Length: 157
Ligand SMILES: Cc1cc2nc3c(=O)[nH]c(=O)nc-3n(C[C@H](O)[C@H](O)[C@H](O)COP(=O)(O)O)c2cc1C
Image (cartoon, rainbow, N blue to C red; front, top):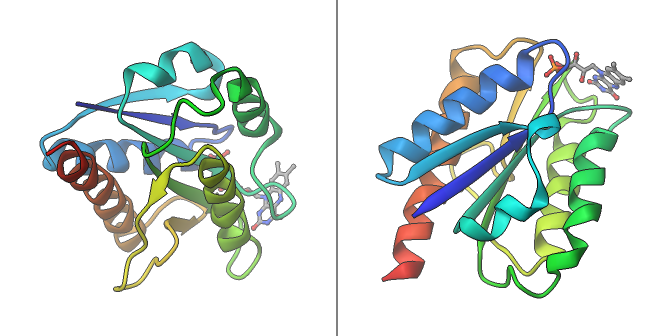
């Protein structure tokens, strides 16, 4: 069982989060595959049981590269029903678009028919950071990865 983590990052903040998400997926006993959006093809998605998207916040939304990646995935539309999804985002400030970006990422995954588990204990929609992720943001990322990994395992039972 494998989870693909696709992220964009220009100045390294989202990348740090991606590594923490990777640790969480591993902790759940599932294999994480970490790819910068510049280095991944949509043709890799079908070999995975989960897809986690990470993006910097650009004008309150995901980066165009992540949107392009998802737009290209239309060739598989209908094939990802029931796959597990999750999202994380890095913002420059507080209350400046992290949640709207996470929701936008989740929306794209939902249109693919994916299953997204929220969290009742903070970071409800996915993991967010302000600038370089601090310890609590990194913990939220690990928990996100673990949640996705566990759900992948549970759905495959
Ligand atoms: C074009 C552009 C637009 C941005 N728009 C926002 C924004 O709307 N809200 C915000 O909080 N930060 C915004 N930022 C800041 C980035 O989201 C922030 O620096 C982020 O941590 C960068 O992630 P990275 O290091 O992974 O590239 C913007 C940055 C750029 C370059």
